[in-house]
Structure formats: C-alpha cells, structure tokens
Amino acid sequence: MELVALLSSGENTWAQVSGLMSHGDWEKIILLGGEDAKAFTHEKPFTFIQIDLSKKLKSLKEEFQEKLKGKFEGMEVALSIASGDGKEHMALMSALINLPMGIRFAALTKDGVIDL
Image (cartoon, rainbow, N blue to C red; front, side):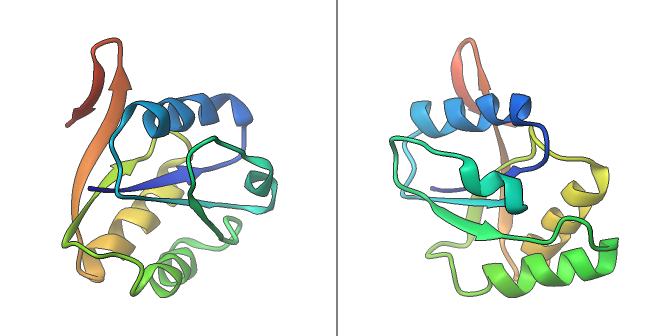
C-alpha cells in the first residue's frame, strides 16, 4: 500500500511519520508539507510535495488535490495525520476522497503499524 503523510509545522510531530515510514512495508511514500518540511530526511525513499499550508481551507484542499492527482497506482492509500491541524487534515482528506481515493488511517503503536 502507498503511504501519504502530512508534515506540518512542529518537528516534534515528525517522529510519528518517521516511525511509520520505518516500520511499514510501503510501495511508495508521499509526504506533503510546507517550506520547513523540506528539511525532513529519512533513510527510505519518498516523494516530497510542497504545499502552502497558510491557504484557506478550500484553496488548500484544491492545492492538495491538484498536486496529488495522478500520483497513485492503487485505489486506496494509508494516511497519517499525526502531524498537522484540523484545517490541514480536512483539506487533505477531502482532496483524497475527491480524487477519488480510499483512505485507511495508519498509525504506529507499540505493537507496530496498525490500520484504524
């Protein structure tokens, strides 16, 4: 499955995304974030898509959708929203649903990667 994760402001939330990347068996990893998220590094390969997270909700959703269109092989993705705020989460989920893509929420727990 392909992993989509949001890297929002506050690098302390990036550890969950990093752990999810390390412990999951992903066919492809797509990370979305603002200017500061370009500094994120990981040993696994990933695609980074820069997004203007300061946009209003509808414009943010449209940017997510435009930049994610055509990026996926399958019909559903694993989604991590461990980083970010409500506006960013709503915009990203709405963009994926409208592509249309199915969503499985992914989280890293002490028992490993789980689908929610």
